[in-house]
Length: 180
Image 1 (spheres, rainbow, N blue to C red):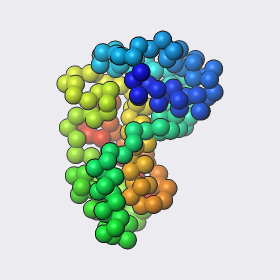
Image 2: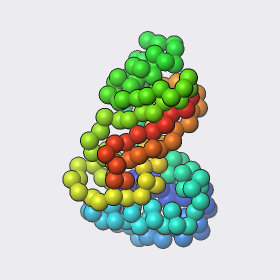
Image 3: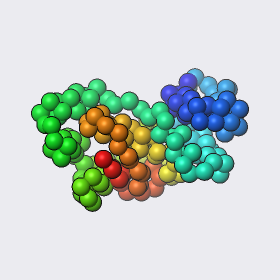
Image 4: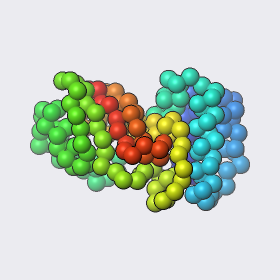
């Protein structure tokens, strides 16, 4: 079972109940253990269209952000080092942006626009593919949840993260608004 689809169905069940999850994702129970990348992408596109067509935006975002990928071990270790080195949020943020080679713009005392230094989508479904067309930005809300998780871990408190753009959604960059 593809982990991304497992996580999506899990999130659907938590937000909509089992019957609601089956309505949006009827293919789940018959998914093969292994799927070609192209089949995964096609299924992801179908599922995102269903989410966009059937549910309100806030519910869709909640579903997609519910169970993001975890923080990779090297990033966790770097976050821990940054937290030990700095008590100030501003310095922690600067060190983390530097680590990720991200560009950012400070909009206000507690708001940043962050653009990751990526040339290709790093999502497991889209990674290492040269051409996959585009998918609804709804897909990228999972990455938004991952982004939120990293910054909450870095700052030891809840933050808000909003998706601005995603590479697999046809944009040139992945960018987010972070509100701390």
